[in-house]
Length: 188
Image (tube, rainbow, N blue to C red; front, side):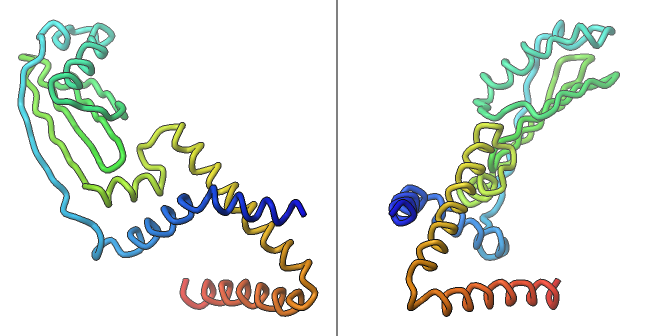
């Protein structure tokens, strides 16, 4: 039977995924218990003045600035924002459990860069939520959800084929649905 085959093998393929999202669901629901301390640090430096000093903001050399900051400070995260004001440029890099924000003085090229690192639990929580993870990780989340839908539906189909368990299984599934709805009504 196709349902049994799908249920068994899709369950095995998605075991790690279900485990990951279950554990991180708990860590997200109890941030005071599981969140480690954020590690903040700050560094200073100086950029090539020609990259930032032009009166014409279109002449600001964004690529050289970003690549210099990445290389000098070992930044692996994507650029989330690059702002140019009259006297300052700011560059933000964001990744799972990580942020780096650079503030560049356009008059002299000096900059301060602040780092925030959330640790392993912070990284895992951001992966769970898809925060600052990019479009490829979004696909991982969507495929994971699709696998969980297949496991749930094939489990229901299998239960319907067992005559002894069909009625009690449907009653329990309906009771679970009603209970979830009542919890929503009462507690939210």
